[in-house]
Image (cartoon, helix red, strand yellow):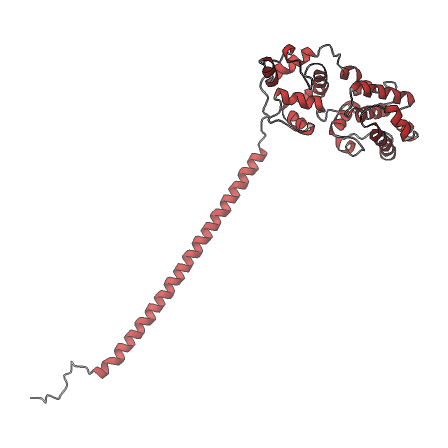
Amino acid sequence: MESSSAQSTYFIPKQECQPASSNMASSSKRQTRSNLIKQQAVKIKLETDVNELLEEKVKVKKARKKVVVSMENNVTKEPIMPENWETVLKNIQIMRAKKDAPVDLMGAEKCADAENSQEVKRFQVLVSLMLSSQTKDQITFAAMEKLRKHGLSVENIINTDEEVIAKLIHPVGFWKKKASYIKKTAAILAEHYNSDIPETVEELCKLPGVGQKMAVLTVNIGWDKTVGIGVDTHVHRIANRLGWTRQPTKTPESTQKELEDWLPRSLWNEVNVLLVGFGQQHCTPVKPHCGTCLNRDLCPVGKSHVNR
């Protein structure tokens, strides 16, 4: 029988087990660390992929939006035509059939001397329109008659004192300022336009005292080119009363744009004189004659006046 102190071959002393256990723990920790690092790397990659995907979606949305806006801008929108506008216009033409309003007899087209050269006639048309601002046609026409008798050409105006011009055009509105404008304009035309007038609205508007309406009508009449609708206080007022603008407009320039958006171009020349005369005789600023107007049942203002 073996001694009790002899060790069994299946028994491993505690001291001999410790190094193996320590090695296993160390190996386990390293594995855990490695797994954590891998998990962190996977997490970072996923977050990066998600962010990139979101950024790509944002880019796609922006690109789509640009395409939609571009398509909308390139689509030709049909103009919004006022209800019954053709009937309303026809009625105004009927009421204006006699063509005996001040604008018909003494407007800018009637102020130029037909016997002069084309250059002189264009200059006279321009001057008459410069005088017409804030002035009745009768007073403008009388002033133009005095100027023509004096000699209304670029050369004659250059050789005439400003004080003399002022006396000739009195009592038109702002006659002193207008005398200065006419004198300066003549000098500019002689120097830059060979004593003729510019052919474009943009160039005409650069002349002293010349506004949008004057420039448009000057080109329409003087150069016989249809470039726009001349809108004065009468046209501005009537267009708003008839509802010929999508929203009420505050300036003649805004009214011009609204009308040109839908009114057929073939009517642009006619509509100025037509509505100005209508405003002088029928659709007056104060107490318009709605009771006798053919459009009293079609015009918003006419309806309100008739139903009072």
